Image (cartoon, rainbow, N blue to C red; front, side, top):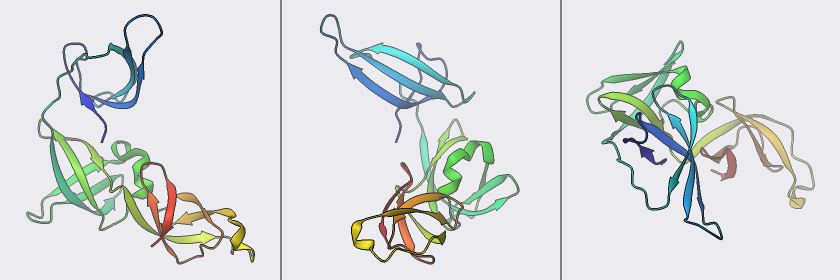
Length: 178
């Protein structure tokens, strides 16, 4: 989960996307960050002194199930209250290539509004299109494969159409067969 900060230095809610601790040979250590603004979507780079503290906002996290896509909106349902929550396609972004109906996701709320959601780290998806495997699959060759969500990942040559595979949703890398 990304570090989310808000405070006097940073007036809006941000998510840290990159973080680098630098200790120069001379002088004090500092932290270089790249952060995404949840309100505007802009990315900004900030540098802080090592040891600086930022206020963490109070966020709530709820597990909801992705049920279906309605036009340009993704619909998530709370399985206890059957209450629906909707996210626009722009808010989902690149995560939609790993999103499958029936998948449980964590929705992050701030001040009663959905600001982000987390996918499971490991996603089980079915291969819908790939080249036939080569006869020398022992060599460890790879090939591209299209998954049921439309995402394309690089898989070992022994993976075939119809196989279920596990993919890391953070990196988009093949993990193993399911």
